[in-house]
Amino acid sequence: MNRGLAVVLTGYVEGDVIRHSEIFAPLRALDLRFGHTVTVLEAMGIFQDDSVPSFERWLASRLEGLVPGIRAEAERWTRVLRDGGPRSRPRGEDTVWLYLNHVRPALLEWSTRYDHLREVTREDVLAQLRTVYGHRRRDQLVALRSLFAWAKRSGLIFRNPTSRIKVGQNEYAVLQPLLPAQVDRSVAATTTPSARLILALAALHAARVAQIGSLMLDDVDIGNRRLTIAGRVHPLDELTLKLLLDWLEHRRKRWSNTANLHLLINNQTATGTGRASNHWINAPLRGQDATLERLRVDRQLEEAMVRGPDPLHLAEVFGLHEKTAMRYADSARALLEQAAEQQHQ
Image 1 (cartoon, rainbow, N blue to C red):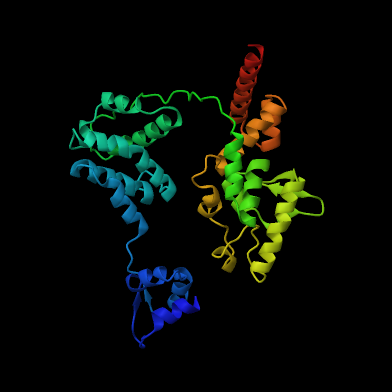
Image 2 (tube, rainbow, N blue to C red; image 1 turned 60 degrees about the vertical axis):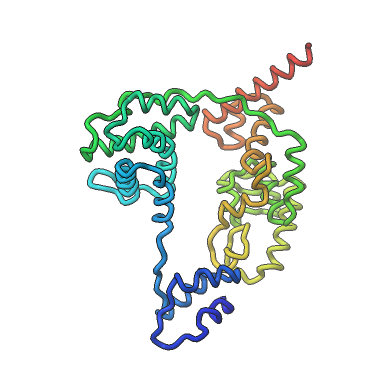
Protein backbone atom coordinates (compact mmCIF):
# COMPACT_ATOMS: atom_id res chain seq x y z
CA MET A 1 0.00 0.00 0.00
CA ASN A 2 2.84 2.38 0.81
CA ARG A 3 4.40 1.68 -2.58
CA GLY A 4 1.06 2.35 -4.25
CA LEU A 5 0.70 5.68 -2.45
CA ALA A 6 4.24 6.63 -3.44
CA VAL A 7 3.38 5.98 -7.09
CA VAL A 8 0.09 7.88 -7.21
CA LEU A 9 1.17 10.81 -5.02
CA THR A 10 4.37 11.52 -6.93
CA GLY A 11 3.99 15.03 -8.27
CA TYR A 12 0.78 15.60 -6.31
CA VAL A 13 -0.02 19.26 -5.60
CA GLU A 14 -2.57 20.34 -3.01
CA GLY A 15 -5.92 20.80 -4.71
CA ASP A 16 -5.36 18.08 -7.31
CA VAL A 17 -7.88 15.27 -7.77
CA ILE A 18 -6.68 11.73 -8.39
CA ARG A 19 -9.02 9.78 -10.67
CA HIS A 20 -9.66 6.05 -10.91
CA SER A 21 -8.93 6.08 -14.64
CA GLU A 22 -5.50 7.59 -14.05
CA ILE A 23 -4.16 5.18 -11.45
CA PHE A 24 -5.89 1.82 -11.96
CA ALA A 25 -3.75 0.60 -14.86
CA PRO A 26 -0.36 1.75 -13.41
CA LEU A 27 -1.04 0.10 -10.04
CA ARG A 28 -2.25 -3.15 -11.58
CA ALA A 29 0.79 -3.23 -13.89
CA LEU A 30 3.03 -3.09 -10.82
CA ASP A 31 0.86 -5.64 -8.96
CA LEU A 32 0.16 -3.12 -6.19
CA ARG A 33 -2.85 -3.03 -3.87
CA PHE A 34 -5.36 -0.78 -5.63
CA GLY A 35 -8.19 -1.16 -3.12
CA HIS A 36 -6.22 -0.21 -0.02
CA THR A 37 -4.53 2.67 -1.84
CA VAL A 38 -7.92 4.05 -2.81
CA THR A 39 -9.13 3.76 0.80
CA VAL A 40 -6.36 6.10 1.92
CA LEU A 41 -6.98 8.51 -0.96
CA GLU A 42 -10.69 8.62 -0.12
CA ALA A 43 -9.86 9.36 3.52
CA MET A 44 -7.70 12.25 2.29
CA GLY A 45 -10.64 13.50 0.19
CA ILE A 46 -8.70 13.60 -3.08
CA PHE A 47 -10.06 10.56 -4.96
CA GLN A 48 -12.68 10.64 -7.70
CA ASP A 49 -14.20 7.38 -8.94
CA ASP A 50 -14.77 7.90 -12.67
CA SER A 51 -14.77 4.20 -13.52
CA VAL A 52 -17.52 2.52 -15.51
CA PRO A 53 -19.50 0.27 -13.10
CA SER A 54 -18.77 -3.40 -13.63
CA PHE A 55 -22.50 -4.09 -14.04
CA GLU A 56 -22.68 -1.75 -17.02
CA ARG A 57 -19.69 -3.39 -18.70
CA TRP A 58 -21.15 -6.83 -18.11
CA LEU A 59 -24.60 -5.85 -19.35
CA ALA A 60 -23.22 -4.37 -22.57
CA SER A 61 -21.24 -7.56 -23.28
CA ARG A 62 -24.26 -9.82 -22.63
CA LEU A 63 -26.55 -7.78 -24.91
CA GLU A 64 -24.08 -7.73 -27.78
CA GLY A 65 -25.39 -9.50 -30.88
CA LEU A 66 -29.08 -8.83 -30.24
CA VAL A 67 -31.18 -6.82 -32.70
CA PRO A 68 -31.96 -3.29 -31.42
CA GLY A 69 -35.60 -3.99 -30.53
CA ILE A 70 -34.94 -7.16 -28.53
CA ARG A 71 -31.79 -5.63 -27.04
CA ALA A 72 -33.70 -2.62 -25.69
CA GLU A 73 -36.44 -4.80 -24.21
CA ALA A 74 -33.94 -7.22 -22.62
CA GLU A 75 -31.98 -4.29 -21.16
CA ARG A 76 -35.09 -2.75 -19.58
CA TRP A 77 -36.04 -6.13 -18.07
CA THR A 78 -32.54 -6.65 -16.68
CA ARG A 79 -32.50 -3.22 -15.05
CA VAL A 80 -35.93 -3.82 -13.49
CA LEU A 81 -34.61 -7.12 -12.10
CA ARG A 82 -31.70 -5.34 -10.47
CA ASP A 83 -33.39 -2.12 -9.36
CA GLY A 84 -36.95 -3.30 -8.80
CA GLY A 85 -40.14 -1.70 -10.03
CA PRO A 86 -43.65 -0.71 -8.97
CA ARG A 87 -44.70 -4.36 -8.65
CA SER A 88 -41.38 -6.15 -8.26
CA ARG A 89 -38.65 -6.22 -5.66
CA PRO A 90 -34.97 -5.78 -6.64
CA ARG A 91 -32.92 -8.94 -7.09
CA GLY A 92 -29.29 -9.53 -6.23
CA GLU A 93 -26.76 -9.04 -9.01
CA ASP A 94 -25.92 -12.76 -8.95
CA THR A 95 -29.57 -13.56 -9.74
CA VAL A 96 -29.68 -10.93 -12.48
CA TRP A 97 -26.50 -12.38 -13.97
CA LEU A 98 -27.97 -15.88 -14.00
CA TYR A 99 -31.31 -14.83 -15.49
CA LEU A 100 -29.81 -12.89 -18.38
CA ASN A 101 -27.27 -15.65 -19.10
CA HIS A 102 -30.09 -18.21 -19.21
CA VAL A 103 -32.21 -16.27 -21.72
CA ARG A 104 -29.33 -15.02 -23.88
CA PRO A 105 -29.08 -18.14 -26.16
CA ALA A 106 -32.79 -17.87 -26.95
CA LEU A 107 -32.59 -14.12 -27.57
CA LEU A 108 -29.63 -14.57 -29.92
CA GLU A 109 -31.49 -17.22 -31.89
CA TRP A 110 -34.68 -15.13 -32.11
CA SER A 111 -32.64 -12.09 -33.16
CA THR A 112 -31.90 -13.86 -36.44
CA ARG A 113 -35.64 -13.87 -37.31
CA TYR A 114 -37.46 -11.27 -35.24
CA ASP A 115 -37.16 -7.59 -34.33
CA HIS A 116 -39.19 -7.57 -31.09
CA LEU A 117 -40.25 -9.92 -28.31
CA ARG A 118 -43.91 -9.65 -29.35
CA GLU A 119 -43.08 -11.73 -32.43
CA VAL A 120 -41.95 -14.73 -30.35
CA THR A 121 -44.51 -17.54 -30.25
CA ARG A 122 -45.18 -20.45 -27.92
CA GLU A 123 -43.73 -22.79 -30.57
CA ASP A 124 -40.51 -20.74 -30.58
CA VAL A 125 -40.18 -21.15 -26.80
CA LEU A 126 -40.86 -24.90 -26.98
CA ALA A 127 -38.32 -25.32 -29.80
CA GLN A 128 -35.69 -23.51 -27.73
CA LEU A 129 -36.42 -25.61 -24.64
CA ARG A 130 -35.97 -28.81 -26.65
CA THR A 131 -32.28 -27.91 -27.05
CA VAL A 132 -31.57 -28.15 -23.30
CA TYR A 133 -32.25 -30.77 -20.64
CA GLY A 134 -32.46 -31.25 -16.88
CA HIS A 135 -31.72 -28.25 -14.68
CA ARG A 136 -30.61 -26.19 -17.68
CA ARG A 137 -34.10 -26.51 -19.18
CA ARG A 138 -35.70 -25.58 -15.87
CA ASP A 139 -33.43 -22.57 -15.35
CA GLN A 140 -33.97 -21.29 -18.88
CA LEU A 141 -37.75 -21.63 -18.63
CA VAL A 142 -37.85 -19.83 -15.27
CA ALA A 143 -35.82 -16.94 -16.72
CA LEU A 144 -37.94 -16.77 -19.89
CA ARG A 145 -41.09 -16.71 -17.77
CA SER A 146 -39.70 -13.74 -15.86
CA LEU A 147 -38.82 -11.91 -19.09
CA PHE A 148 -42.18 -12.43 -20.80
CA ALA A 149 -44.23 -11.80 -17.63
CA TRP A 150 -42.49 -8.42 -17.31
CA ALA A 151 -43.06 -7.71 -21.02
CA LYS A 152 -46.76 -8.51 -20.63
CA ARG A 153 -47.12 -6.20 -17.61
CA SER A 154 -45.28 -3.46 -19.50
CA GLY A 155 -47.56 -3.75 -22.54
CA LEU A 156 -44.78 -4.87 -24.87
CA ILE A 157 -46.50 -8.13 -25.83
CA PHE A 158 -50.15 -9.16 -26.15
CA ARG A 159 -49.79 -12.80 -25.07
CA ASN A 160 -47.23 -14.53 -22.86
CA PRO A 161 -45.71 -17.38 -24.95
CA THR A 162 -44.44 -19.17 -21.82
CA SER A 163 -47.91 -19.60 -20.29
CA ARG A 164 -48.85 -23.18 -19.35
CA ILE A 165 -45.44 -24.57 -20.29
CA LYS A 166 -44.49 -26.93 -17.46
CA VAL A 167 -40.98 -27.31 -16.16
CA GLY A 168 -41.36 -31.07 -15.75
CA GLN A 169 -39.42 -33.45 -13.53
CA ASN A 170 -35.63 -33.48 -13.83
CA GLU A 171 -34.25 -36.80 -14.98
CA TYR A 172 -30.84 -37.24 -13.39
CA ALA A 173 -28.16 -39.52 -14.72
CA VAL A 174 -26.44 -41.98 -12.40
CA LEU A 175 -23.60 -40.27 -10.53
CA GLN A 176 -20.23 -41.77 -11.40
CA PRO A 177 -17.26 -42.11 -9.03
CA LEU A 178 -13.97 -40.44 -9.83
CA LEU A 179 -11.15 -42.53 -11.23
CA PRO A 180 -8.03 -42.96 -9.05
CA ALA A 181 -5.89 -41.24 -11.70
CA GLN A 182 -8.15 -38.18 -11.63
CA VAL A 183 -7.85 -37.91 -7.85
CA ASP A 184 -4.07 -38.42 -8.02
CA ARG A 185 -3.70 -35.52 -10.47
CA SER A 186 -5.64 -33.23 -8.16
CA VAL A 187 -3.57 -34.29 -5.16
CA ALA A 188 -0.39 -33.54 -7.13
CA ALA A 189 -1.74 -30.09 -8.02
CA THR A 190 -2.12 -29.04 -4.38
CA THR A 191 1.33 -27.81 -3.42
CA THR A 192 0.63 -25.34 -0.61
CA PRO A 193 -0.59 -25.91 2.97
CA SER A 194 -3.85 -24.09 2.26
CA ALA A 195 -4.54 -26.02 -0.96
CA ARG A 196 -3.88 -29.38 0.70
CA LEU A 197 -6.23 -28.56 3.58
CA ILE A 198 -8.94 -27.35 1.19
CA LEU A 199 -8.69 -30.58 -0.79
CA ALA A 200 -9.02 -32.67 2.37
CA LEU A 201 -12.07 -30.73 3.54
CA ALA A 202 -13.83 -31.39 0.23
CA ALA A 203 -12.63 -34.96 -0.36
CA LEU A 204 -12.88 -36.30 3.20
CA HIS A 205 -15.59 -34.17 4.80
CA ALA A 206 -17.69 -33.31 1.72
CA ALA A 207 -17.52 -29.59 2.50
CA ARG A 208 -18.81 -27.13 -0.08
CA VAL A 209 -16.58 -24.30 -1.28
CA ALA A 210 -18.67 -21.66 0.51
CA GLN A 211 -18.57 -23.71 3.72
CA ILE A 212 -14.79 -24.01 3.50
CA GLY A 213 -14.43 -20.26 3.04
CA SER A 214 -16.73 -19.56 6.00
CA LEU A 215 -14.82 -21.73 8.51
CA MET A 216 -13.63 -19.80 11.57
CA LEU A 217 -10.76 -20.54 13.92
CA ASP A 218 -13.32 -21.33 16.63
CA ASP A 219 -14.69 -24.14 14.44
CA VAL A 220 -11.44 -26.07 14.99
CA ASP A 221 -11.14 -28.03 18.24
CA ILE A 222 -7.71 -29.64 18.11
CA GLY A 223 -7.86 -30.94 21.70
CA ASN A 224 -11.05 -32.89 21.15
CA ARG A 225 -10.19 -33.61 17.51
CA ARG A 226 -13.38 -32.09 16.15
CA LEU A 227 -14.17 -29.75 13.28
CA THR A 228 -17.49 -27.95 12.89
CA ILE A 229 -18.58 -27.38 9.29
CA ALA A 230 -21.84 -25.52 8.67
CA GLY A 231 -23.00 -26.34 12.20
CA ARG A 232 -22.26 -30.08 11.95
CA VAL A 233 -19.47 -31.61 14.04
CA HIS A 234 -17.01 -33.85 12.18
CA PRO A 235 -14.39 -36.02 13.90
CA LEU A 236 -10.87 -35.15 12.80
CA ASP A 237 -9.08 -38.04 11.11
CA GLU A 238 -5.28 -38.26 11.20
CA LEU A 239 -4.76 -36.80 7.73
CA THR A 240 -7.03 -33.80 8.20
CA LEU A 241 -5.54 -33.16 11.65
CA LYS A 242 -2.01 -33.13 10.22
CA LEU A 243 -3.00 -30.81 7.37
CA LEU A 244 -4.78 -28.51 9.80
CA LEU A 245 -1.72 -28.27 12.05
CA ASP A 246 0.54 -27.63 9.05
CA TRP A 247 -1.76 -24.84 7.84
CA LEU A 248 -2.13 -23.24 11.27
CA GLU A 249 1.65 -23.17 11.70
CA HIS A 250 2.06 -21.61 8.24
CA ARG A 251 -0.70 -19.12 9.02
CA ARG A 252 0.95 -18.13 12.30
CA LYS A 253 4.33 -17.54 10.69
CA ARG A 254 3.03 -15.75 7.61
CA TRP A 255 0.36 -13.52 9.20
CA SER A 256 1.15 -13.43 12.90
CA ASN A 257 -0.57 -10.07 13.47
CA THR A 258 -3.73 -10.59 11.43
CA ALA A 259 -7.09 -9.78 13.00
CA ASN A 260 -8.94 -12.07 10.59
CA LEU A 261 -10.61 -14.94 12.47
CA HIS A 262 -11.41 -17.01 9.39
CA LEU A 263 -9.51 -20.29 9.25
CA LEU A 264 -8.35 -19.81 5.67
CA ILE A 265 -6.86 -16.45 4.74
CA ASN A 266 -4.55 -15.12 2.03
CA ASN A 267 -2.60 -11.97 1.21
CA GLN A 268 -5.78 -10.04 0.47
CA THR A 269 -7.94 -11.13 3.41
CA ALA A 270 -5.16 -11.11 6.03
CA THR A 271 -5.33 -7.29 6.12
CA GLY A 272 -9.09 -7.32 6.80
CA THR A 273 -11.69 -9.53 8.41
CA GLY A 274 -13.55 -10.95 5.41
CA ARG A 275 -13.51 -14.53 4.13
CA ALA A 276 -11.44 -15.75 1.19
CA SER A 277 -13.26 -15.76 -2.15
CA ASN A 278 -14.64 -18.89 -3.79
CA HIS A 279 -12.39 -18.10 -6.75
CA TRP A 280 -9.26 -18.34 -4.59
CA ILE A 281 -10.46 -21.54 -2.89
CA ASN A 282 -11.18 -23.21 -6.25
CA ALA A 283 -7.99 -21.98 -7.94
CA PRO A 284 -5.57 -24.88 -7.16
CA LEU A 285 -7.87 -27.46 -8.81
CA ARG A 286 -9.20 -25.34 -11.64
CA GLY A 287 -8.92 -27.31 -14.88
CA GLN A 288 -8.65 -30.67 -13.11
CA ASP A 289 -11.19 -33.46 -13.61
CA ALA A 290 -11.43 -33.89 -9.85
CA THR A 291 -12.52 -30.38 -8.84
CA LEU A 292 -13.54 -29.56 -5.30
CA GLU A 293 -17.20 -30.03 -6.23
CA ARG A 294 -16.51 -33.39 -7.89
CA LEU A 295 -14.50 -34.51 -4.87
CA ARG A 296 -17.35 -33.52 -2.55
CA VAL A 297 -19.85 -35.48 -4.64
CA ASP A 298 -17.48 -38.44 -4.83
CA ARG A 299 -17.15 -38.53 -1.04
CA GLN A 300 -20.93 -38.67 -0.56
CA LEU A 301 -21.30 -41.29 -3.28
CA GLU A 302 -18.57 -43.36 -1.63
CA GLU A 303 -20.42 -43.21 1.70
CA ALA A 304 -23.59 -44.43 0.00
CA MET A 305 -21.75 -47.36 -1.59
CA VAL A 306 -19.74 -48.39 1.47
CA ARG A 307 -22.44 -47.99 4.13
CA GLY A 308 -25.33 -48.98 1.89
CA PRO A 309 -27.69 -46.82 -0.20
CA ASP A 310 -29.62 -45.49 2.79
CA PRO A 311 -30.86 -41.92 2.19
CA LEU A 312 -31.59 -41.41 5.91
CA HIS A 313 -27.98 -42.17 6.79
CA LEU A 314 -26.70 -39.80 4.09
CA ALA A 315 -29.02 -37.02 5.22
CA GLU A 316 -27.82 -37.45 8.80
CA VAL A 317 -24.09 -37.60 8.03
CA PHE A 318 -23.90 -34.81 5.45
CA GLY A 319 -26.97 -32.74 6.21
CA LEU A 320 -28.45 -33.37 2.77
CA HIS A 321 -31.96 -32.55 1.64
CA GLU A 322 -34.07 -35.70 1.40
CA LYS A 323 -34.32 -35.50 -2.40
CA THR A 324 -30.55 -35.07 -2.75
CA ALA A 325 -29.94 -37.97 -0.36
CA MET A 326 -32.30 -40.14 -2.41
CA ARG A 327 -30.42 -39.28 -5.59
CA TYR A 328 -27.11 -40.41 -4.06
CA ALA A 329 -28.77 -43.57 -2.76
CA ASP A 330 -30.28 -44.35 -6.17
CA SER A 331 -26.93 -43.82 -7.91
CA ALA A 332 -25.12 -46.03 -5.38
CA ARG A 333 -27.73 -48.75 -5.76
CA ALA A 334 -27.40 -48.66 -9.56
CA LEU A 335 -23.60 -48.82 -9.38
CA LEU A 336 -23.67 -51.72 -6.91
CA GLU A 337 -26.15 -53.65 -9.07
CA GLN A 338 -24.02 -53.01 -12.14
CA ALA A 339 -20.92 -54.28 -10.33
CA ALA A 340 -22.78 -57.41 -9.18
CA GLU A 341 -23.95 -58.16 -12.73
CA GLN A 342 -20.40 -57.85 -14.05
CA GLN A 343 -19.13 -60.31 -11.42
CA HIS A 344 -21.71 -62.93 -12.48
CA GLN A 345 -20.86 -62.67 -16.14
